[in-house]
View 1: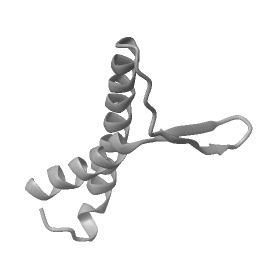
View 2: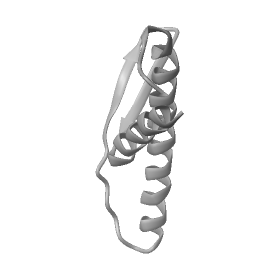
View 3: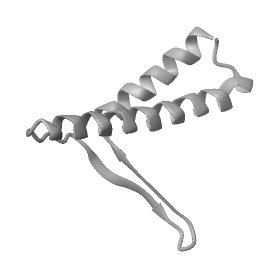
View 4: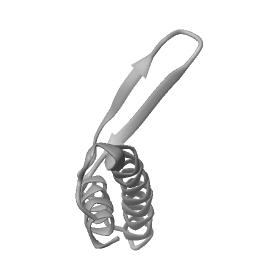
Amino acid sequence: MKLIKKNIKPLVIFIFLGLVIGTLTWEILEKLVALSGRSFSLGVGPVGFDLGAFSFYMRFNPGSLLGAGGGILLFRTL
């Protein structure tokens, strides 16, 4: 799909969902490796904001970047 003004919202949604899915998948991978007795962590964060009544934080790791890239690839193939 070509990027035009009408398609920016779906692109942002795909990237955000890719970030979330990639982060969660990487966290699961880290937990599985930890079960084998090894520890490895490549995460950065938490990064986010706190508005008092509402806060949002997210840890970034290589899975986040891979997920965002996957979201962009999925967008381009549609």
